[in-house]
Structure formats: C-alpha cells, structure tokens
Length: 248
View 1 (tube, rainbow, N blue to C red):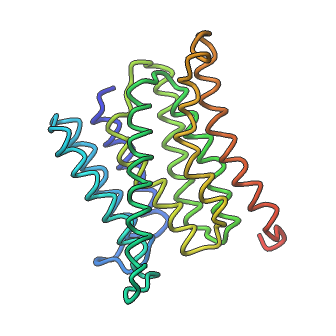
View 2: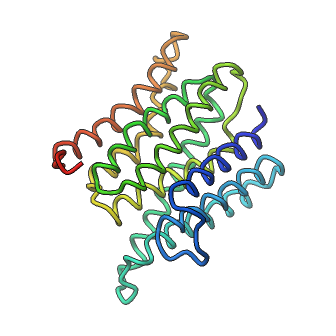
View 3: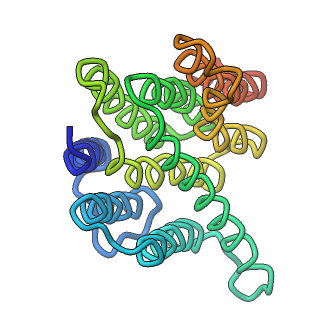
C-alpha cells in the first residue's frame, strides 16, 4: 500500500469520526475539539504532500515544525497567560517534545514492517481512550476510539500486505494522538503523570529494535507491542486509582 493511501485513509477516517462526534465544526474554531479537526486536516495534507513529493530534508522538517508549533499554539492559546513571560516557554518546550516524538515514530515506521507497529499503536490507543474518558472527557475519548478503530484496519492490512507503509499516516497520527493528550491535560483532568506516560508509549516501541532483541525473529514484534503497552497501561492505572468510577 503506497504511503499516500495510508495518509488519505487515516485522515479521512478521523475527520469523518470527528464530524460524527462533534458535527460539522465551526470556522473559525473556538474550542479545542473543532480546532483539532482542522489540525488533522492539515496533517493529512502534509502526509499526502510528503509521499507525493520528496522535498529536501530541511523543507520537510520546516513544514513539520510549522504544523507542530501551530498545533501547540492553537490548542493551548485559550489557557495561556499571554501577559506572562513564561507563556512562551511551555509551548516552545511542548513543540520540541512533539517534534522529537514525530522523529522517533517516523524513523520507527521506516524500520518496522508488518502489523506489529500498528498493533503497538492500537494497544496504546486502547489504553488512552478510557484514560481520557475517566479524566472527564467523553468526546476526547471518542476521538481516541476513532483513531483506534482506524489502527485496527491498518493492523489487519499490514498483516495481509507486510510491505505496507505507514509513512504518510505518521503526520496524521502524531497530530491527532498528541493533540488529544494536550486536550486531555489542559481541558479535562488528565494527570501530568498519565500524560507523560501516554506521550512516551509510541516511541517506547523502539525497544523492539534493540540488538539483543533482534537476534530472534519473533522477538521484535512482541517487544514493540509490550514496550508501548506498558506505559500506556500504567497511565490508565493511575487514572483508575484517582477516579470515582461510580461517576461513570
């Protein structure tokens, strides 16, 4: 499956899920959920562009920096104190962190073939969605469920066609997944510890690329899934311990 197909499929699937949850978003968007819709749309266009045109490395990462910085700014602007000199520190730090996660996932996509990486991301979302729900946001949890549903399809397709690539879909996944974490942290009650654990879960799949793990052919796929699942499950456990389940 060409990279542009994965970008288009994930982008269209998420946008359709977003409309089903929120309705057609207003423009200009004033709330984080509708803002995330347009950010996912922009990420889909970037994914298509990257797979259709092999831009120079500096230009490609320049577009990623622009999209990531815009994502952080638009999602956090309503809760920022623009009169404070510290107002720019957190957005800048979060932008750098998201770019690091993007680089990590992008490099892993280029190395890992087969269904194990989509499955690792799916397991992460299977923990992230209920974590968001228990943090007080049904809609953010539903968006996480829409992303998880798309990853089920990707994992099945990667099992049928091991040569399938997720290259084009990386931009969409990063903006959608980390956008949901930011929304959960700043607009719901997602604990900082759970936010950090969910953030490191996808890059943790790099554990499957360790040299001693790759000595056995069966080990890397299993380690990828487990390495991503452990921090994501820990994030869910933290929220479970802090939540009043009777409220749900």
